[in-house]
Length: 231
Image (cartoon, one colour):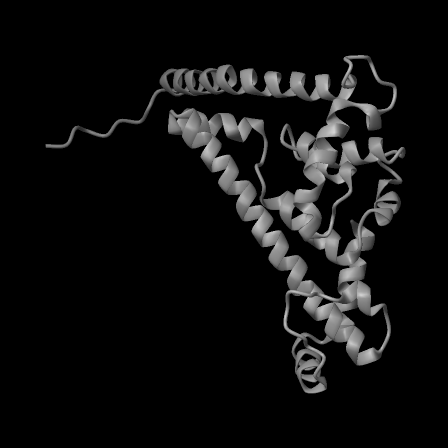
């Protein structure tokens, strides 16, 4: 026999909310504070533990140089992008702010400065990766709280980064096929820049005509360029 349903009292609801919020803050704040301290240390000191005036000479920049080759297949191998992705683990908002600092510009002009780091293809790939990889340390703390296992939490973080890398790579390769087909049709652009050695050759005009009709290439190119201007 089921008990009678009762409307919860305001006191019990508030107590339950406070217990859940306090438990999350105690666990999440510890990880957030630790991650922030690590990022601050890496960004402030060099390999000889001297305070740096330029972030390009910091331990964080060295880490960015080490990670840069991992992102080369995605179209962005610049160490500044890798460094921004590392700081983005604390919060995704830190990606743009880190790039603005490393590029020597402010938030108002960072969109123009990003044009020196990205092409249309690599920008789309970068946005996909940033969208899908590990959200932030607060999310990691919540995962650890639910999984009750540090090892499983690390596995989930690695899986998220792996899914982000594979998806961004597929987007980069797919966009390369589209842009290469358009270049072959118009005869414009550099063949070396648009060449993709590990994809079948799509230079047959019939195949390009079919892709042109399917994707409406001029409209698609204009839309992508408009999105990049907004970004």
